[in-house]
Image 1: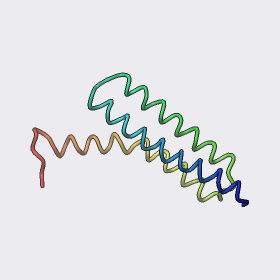
Image 2: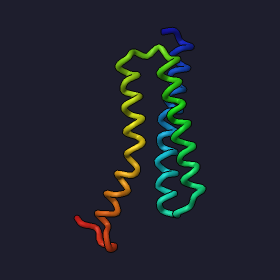
Image 3: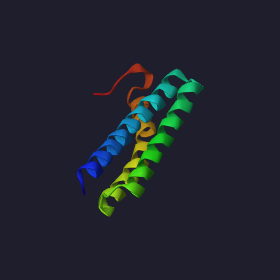
Length: 99
């Protein structure tokens, strides 16, 4: 792997992680505010995240194990915000947090 390939792969992986975070924040905002705009932006962020994942898988010199990790992580990132939201709602039901 040459220096240019390392730089390109690093930038794509950074974008991949950034878009996953943006997806999570926008999804949480869509639940908190109940606004359609945040929901649509969250979907757009996740689609861009998936596009970054596809680009990583198809055009980087990473090994198959790392590329498999990208695929599995993308599905996990899709599930994490709703699971976390359900857990927080359950644990803070009626305004009382359990210790």
